[in-house]
Length: 328
Image (tube, rainbow, N blue to C red; front, side, top):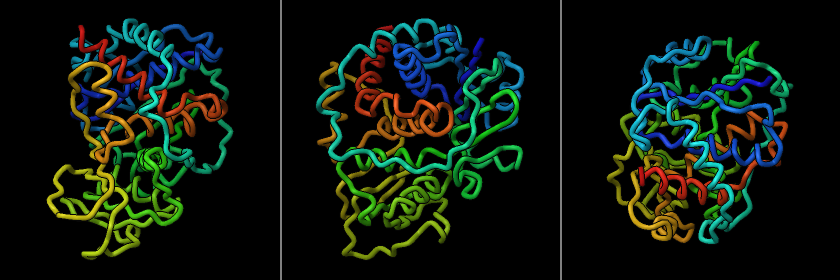
């Protein structure tokens, strides 16, 4: 019997939409015949500033550090059966044409590790957010990418015998940029305000795909090794990612991405229109959904990566489930 527990950890954490994305991808894969032995995975959010408390839950499940999940107005582990029902209904929807990609996605060539096929009864998958991403530094964790080198881990997997880790924020942003029509490989220019874990992951992935990185400052700035362009008054940015949400410089830019996403209002059609790929402002949901897919693709289920939903499908379903949650 295959067992699976999933959690998102960090602080604050009560508004996270990662559990919705997890259930959507899982429902889609179950429809395709995967995870047939998995009935009710454990799903929770853990509010903490310390990575040891997340790892402690991974070894022995407990009820500590579990706040009320704001979208459902109750604890997530209690609401999980209802959330899975919402997800199972949403995946019947076709992707909205306003979410269609302007370019084909650019995936990284991650070194293939010999992951187990999911036969362990102790599988634990984790997503980390601030302030936990830089706290994984031990060699106990086997990285599948540069996560430990740049001190930015947002995805973990425990297979019952050992730990694996990855950084997918950056690859998620590259995926989103392609979706919005930007060819990173041709030297697309990205400006980053901030230098924390997410910023380092974004800069690293962008450079690895052939793009140019300029630092726009912030309380924490990018290390020199992750900057390969000095901006001037003539610089035109293809994308700016305001990781800290404090950018006050006047710059020439085609697209602005703020990783922070806010609650939405309006009809389903109005919400989809506000997230359309025709917009210059890229909602943080795009980055969240893309990096979540990368966790499945590279770390959790690399053996079925070709069978994952597309980004436009996942975004369509996410908006639909958010509408359901707002009706509670």
